[in-house]
Image: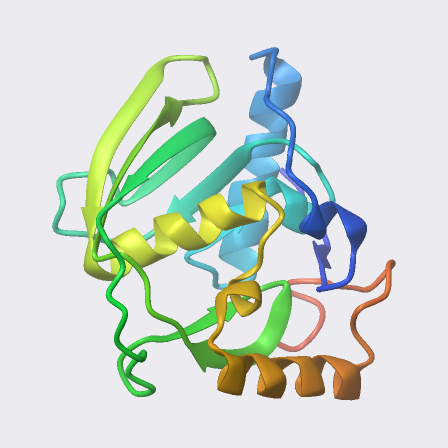
Length: 190
């Protein structure tokens, strides 16, 4: 298993829809193993393939939950069903979100409180579960990556302006920027 560099906002693969996985083979399972290794090294709760420069519909997660889902898992070619998202403003103390591809920054975002995800594991076997609360947030966040969206694309105007100002200050928004988990300082201070 290999820890891979994580792409930063502005890398084209992060901003386009990932393609379906068509072959469930040893190469796919090796990629998934590398994704778990990278997620662990980054102290992440989830990692999508576009975040390591691979435009495929795959994400891994590591999140203890009360929903009966495994605390670690992979979803290949997932389909997501969500509850309604409240129109209320996000709570800046309770609903802050961060992203390994927008490293070190956190902003409030309202998400659905419930999600059902269906997809496949690395062997092509069906995977299906429901997630609530923060676990639902993790699933939605990673799924968004597969559609070419980062959480900063969903922020309300006030926070979106702050995020884009910070991205400009950090020099992000151009291809070729990455950070290396386990080598570079942890952007979230874990």
